[in-house]
Amino acid sequence: MTRILVVDDDPQILRALRINLRARQYDVDVAADGAGALHAAGAHPPDLVVLDLGLPDMDGADVIRGLRGWTAVPIIVLSGRAEGTDKVAALDAGADDYVTKPFGVDELLARIRAVTRRAHPQDPAAGAIVTVGRYTVDLGDHTINPEQRLTPTEWQLLEQLLRNPGKLITQRHLLKEVWGPQYGTETNYLRQYMARLRRKLEDDPTRPKHLLTEPGMGYRFQP
Image (cartoon, rainbow, N blue to C red; front, side, top):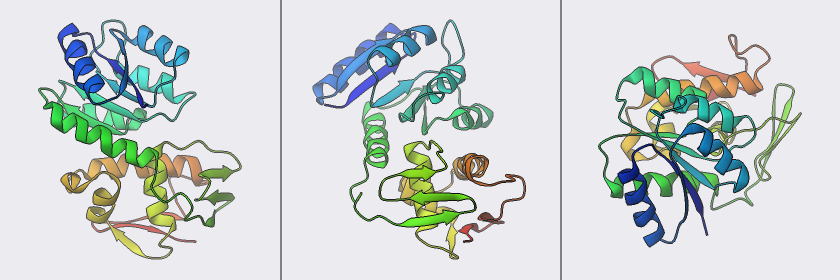
């Protein structure tokens, strides 16, 4: 059973999500602040985290960074902050998706299913060994040598590029394949995630040699 940790300081939201998620056969833990979230995640590691940014003891982005220090668990931000800068900050900290309050339960459930699919791809046997600079990437086992830890969303984006060496992949195609068809205009997602991949896999992230941007069009993996 998939375990979801829901973090929010609004008791009504915690109660509503606990009821709705349990009704759909999810195992649910809840926390009302950042410290409680980090403790709960350490005591009972979740398969997915739904996280509010406006917590009473710390900013949600700090909770994301705390989790990312030891786990690649998918994180969906659920926040009343609708500004683009808040979305970018959350994605840059390591979030996988961002849902703005007020929200519909059906939309959140769809986001949960999409992130879960990225974390557990349906065709793990379709492996390939690809060299990216000084790194060897095994797409079948989801391992990198020398070791680098990627989140499920980072893996999905990297796979789209590495399985199409030398080919331009459009922004729209990447957004559709990694996040879903409703994300066709969320190019800030791509910018943040490509920046994270370059920090992890390029010798000089400011002058990438392998994970290239084609301005206004998309991205390309150059072997």
